[in-house]
Amino acid sequence: MANGNGARKLPGQLVTIERHILERQKLHPDATGDLTRILQDIALAGKLIASHTTQAGLAEVLGTTNEINVQGEEVQKLDEISNDILFRLNDHTGRLAAMVSEEASDILHIPDKYPTGKYVLSFDPLDGSSNIDYNVSVGTIFAIHRRKSPIGERGTLEDCTQKGRDIVAAGYILYGSSTMFVYSAGHSVNGFTLDPQIGEFILSHPDIKIPAKPKYFSANLGYQQHWSPGVQKFTGWVQGEDGGPELGLRYIGSMVADFHRTLLSGGIFYYPANIHDKKRPNGKLRLLYEVNPLSFIMEQAGGAASDGHQSPLDIQPNGLHHRTPFFVGNKELVAQAEKFIEQYG
Ligand code: P6P
Image 1 (cartoon, helix red, strand yellow):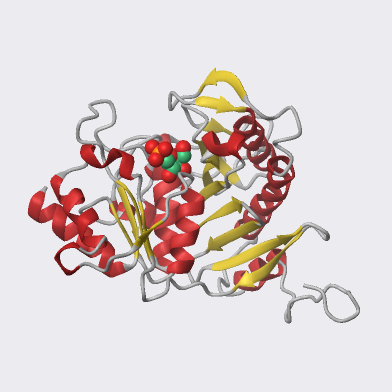
Image 2: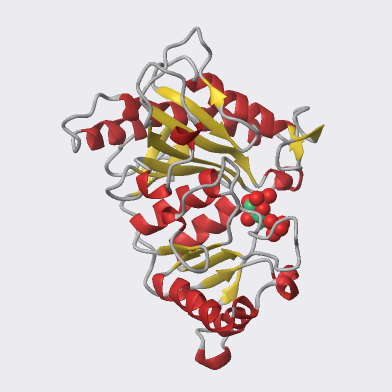
């Protein structure tokens, strides 16, 4: 924003993410500052990843590494770079017991030469990466839990497969027309926009709440014939059948972007199971580092999340890459989806 003399007009109260996280720390008298510093490290990772995603079309990072990851998906170079940035910024700090990444089949242990700490960090380093070559927004998603095993030992699978209900902080970074960092540590949801000229995330969306009036529904209608009868009924209802709300459709195919728009505009995003896909009976999205962090954010913002029957946050993960159907957005819309599924299967 430029005012009369062309000088850039700064937002009224200039709150950087570092300041905001530190101020939130005061809400936890017993806080040691570890969680604060983990969040600050993730914000730094976001700045570094953003510097790559904005040049993806120019630098050699475009294209794939021709490797296949644990998900059976082609690993895009930016996936690997983002994964390395997040791992290397966190592996030596002594704040984490272990890490979980979409890009790694097993737990990412802290190297023996470094101390372990009291938190577990799970992340999808670059969700939506299949869209990188089309210059579509992509995102990083993360969740932080307290470890359950004794400090000082290597993190365990039990530490890494805790319910989303026990998340202490979660958020996402959206690399879009601007780079945004949105997080919650359990009190409210706050959004920060990166000012590339000063390299700071500035508070731009304080205390985000999903609007009461829904605007869009967001799903890949290309798969509609593979959805259960209940989900198909719900999809007709959101478009006005049986007195439904007749919402517009927006689908980017990059979940962080689709989720962020749903959070700010109101509506529902859903990725149901494909009932004809024996390989993926529970859909495509992963519980630990995609669905749970976004469910945590949406609940903090006054919305709801479901796997079609219950909040994903109440599901006991059956492994690091547990997949689940996902419905997220306004409470009434999520509840209606659950009703149709209960009634029609
Ligand atoms: P489809 C991206 O690969 C992703 O994991 C999510 O970001 C996105 O919501 C979904 O897959 C898109 O999948 O099958 O609609 O292309």
